[in-house]
Image (spheres, rainbow, N blue to C red):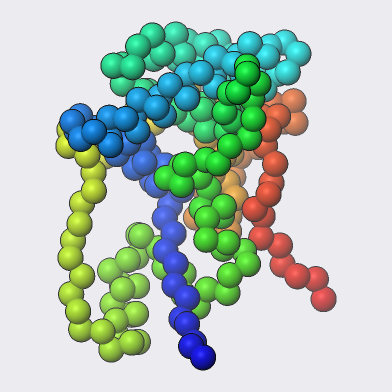
Length: 226
């Protein structure tokens, strides 16, 4: 029989999402895997958003106040695969269309792990983790764990960001320039992660008529009643 000490690390939801966008969609690497990944993901985004926009006015997957903005993002970004995916298009895809297209119908799909809510990964609500660290406090957390288990090994510093990727400041500026309502929807998308893992500043309120119709709170951790 073995006893395991379960460890997981989480990250500020917005920093994590912007980092994923920066790494996967702003790099200029010529590596085959990166180019194929980027092209396929961009085509999926454009196709899904075009289909969602066509649901108006009956389906209303896209709230009225966002329709013109998303239409403009699709028109600007989806003419060819050489155009860099904008942050607005990326966030609109995550918030409004976590679906694939098959025979002109939208179907639920697995969201890429880089972009999926943290609560949908690793079964955080069901696993009994002994330690939950954060990227923001990683140095102190790792020092604690090394001391606890008497580990002397020095871990290497590894950077996985693609060549030519936008800087952190550049991506943050892209975020700042987004319409306030788009930012509000993005914060709504990340709200559960922020609440469960203790990251402040994500409280946002959207009227029922403005909520994306596909949103279901599937990963809320609930405190057992006694």
